[in-house]
Image (cartoon, rainbow, N blue to C red; front, side, top):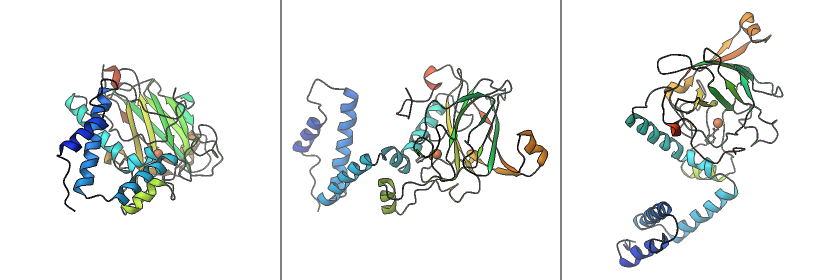
Length: 309
Ligand code: BEZ
Ligand code: FE
């Protein structure tokens, strides 16, 4: 079918009314975005000759997506979170604020208010018999000077690839901690090596990924928020090297600088240093922050987050 209606007065007027452009009330920014959004959807229907059957299956797909609470899971799967990162990187470049440890996506599984400790934290509750992981690192500024009293907020999945709070079988704040760096900018944590994440196999996100011939897996990874007044807030994650999905993350979060080796340590004296009596795996992640006096860049951007007031 080669029916073309987008340029007709009828459709132009319809879009204006849809977006409330002929009304005085409402919010101008929302009107502008909805006008453009609906225009582009109409245009897709016209250009790709979308059938009523295809259209209604998309509408009911969105219904299911909402019922399953998966909109914030589909977004990274469709590259949207990574695209926002690309834009923020470009904005930093333009503002002369590039550099430091690269950012990457937050994902939908953060929970605010994890226990805060000084210098070191034990993150796991001891109920899962995973490989012990020791994470160490130093936070410095762009000149290599230590940043003391930075808050390093770390969260990661368990052996099933599941996150506490969203997985009610785990204890409160399991595998989630905030650690304040010491006078030398150092932080350390004891935890267990996480497994990678997989989208719910029967969920809406996986259903669409199947139609795209894509998987819904992420490599084993560890999330970070790092913040201190006077520095650009950093949202990032590290991916453990050697995972099947390290360079094939369905959420597009992998960056070369953020792939970190997990090193097995067999030395008993090194284990004893952390009060351990068996070999462990060490992960080192040093973080460089970039200073800024712009207050809006010093904290994480607003979005809906679990337990955030
Ligand atoms: C995660 O952090 O595990 C995650 C990120 C994006 C989508 C799904 C999960
Ligand atoms: Fe994650």
